[in-house]
Image 1 (cartoon, rainbow, N blue to C red):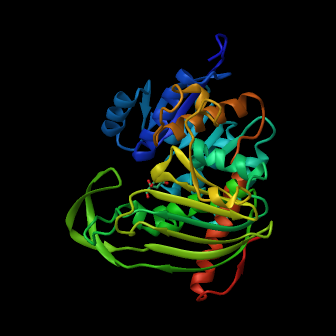
Image 2 (cartoon, rainbow, N blue to C red; image 1 turned 90 degrees about the vertical axis):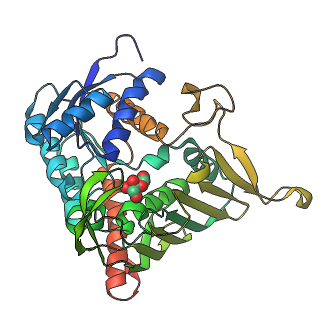
Length: 390
Ligand code: SOE
């Protein structure tokens, strides 16, 4: 960090799993990256006073509060970081932008297209010195950023096909409790918004192309689950009562990109045996790349121009100081993990707003992803008609 770096005071709204991840990002980013401003972990906000105090102690926040509106009203807060369930994103983000705070908001941007539109409009209205960004963190995994660099440098030629899947299995058990991620009012959709949003953003980021239309199906396998007794991580303990699952368990869709590519997409939290497999494979006219979050320190690269005797996917270790984000970390060959994406996200956000430049992905980018999610929902409701999203 520069010695004379001015402070940037953060209030984090929410303290679940993503609260822990963002806290780690804010804590670590200024210690490893040379930042032009000094993020200060000023205020952690949550509805349960005791719970939020415990989280603040554990993660290193200076103060706690139970009312997000009071946090936004404070003059000594510069950034509102939103990690609450999607149902409250719009209200908090719009209020924060109207109060002149920079906003970082978890994905998907909102629960509905209307909310996402209102958020993007609020970001536009906020003027030239107030910025908003969506937390599509996986763009900041060095191998994903390097995949984009390769594709953009022309290393795979003309981009033709995208195969993107985000597969987890923490909901395979029909008795896993009904958490907020399984309820439409809080989550908006199921695997589609939770995981499909990442697959859409990452494939658009890597290819540099936007999805213009989709055709999809959604499916729910388990319609009722035990209510949640006590939350822990993604799940928690189950109570004796049961309630309805009101979101999809699986989303499958195809899409067309504005640069001529065609893609297939899959998102599910019921893919038995797959733990956190976000995979994006892009096939071009002279090569291909293959990214897999479960092997996040490497990238598959195929060069179709190599002599036949040497053809095949190469496993590039994305662990060198010259790879994206890597110079701040360890000596050559030393790997990174899940939490580093959040440190890179904090770094990119701080650098952009300090330079008075729009951080990416913007709320407009988040809205565009929301249009794709909405297109899949409309297509699925209508039983797979082609649905334009641009
Ligand atoms: C659960 O499916 C989850 O935590 C998602 O909500 C996140 O967006 C993803 O990054 C990891 O899995």
